[in-house]
Image (cartoon, rainbow, N blue to C red; front, side, top):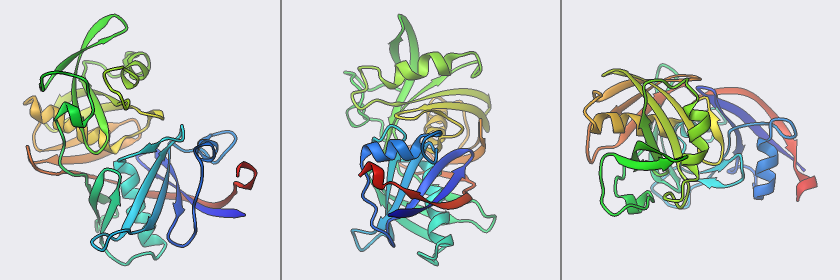
Length: 280
């Protein structure tokens, strides 16, 4: 039976979005991998499903599946697309939407400019909750990659991030180190690897190798994690422009104990239907 879908993108981070409110969506990891395949399926970085809320204080449940079929906890760009999708599909008339995901409850706000702001929650720095295998919490950790010591800052924004501050994001480090950091044994659930160059106190350049996906044109939670790291290390102001390969997002963080705000576009590319019966 054909299933309707919407193709969306936020800063080039692209998604196949399913309406799980109006339709029953029950797909396997193999089916998610097939849908995400850019030659045999629709093609996307991640698959998003908006579902009916399971609790009275939220509007929708939001599920995220990586291109490798694994389920993810958080996706800032995907959350923005979910807000735009819910409004455009008539699932809600609200400008402020509350969603629940594996990462917890988030507030999504549709701005008059057409952009969407995501409140991504309060960052978690306890290594045990990232999770990251280390004895003593620090702001910067040494990590051995391919026989060399690199320095990373580690945190969770509902999903795990390891951010490295570098002088050049185009010198091959993303390609060579990204997969090794992602699968490093000190990250038992793997990790998103960010490579950040600080331009000035209000502007950074960032590339992210995403867990279960590879490098994407943008990573919303990665942008949030990078700004948090820069702020904790005294390099950045509270509001920062984050330039990614797919465009620029704005991240605001007021400091310890405060939520991270991510603002950027959410665009519908096209709509269609997909037949997955052959994989059932």
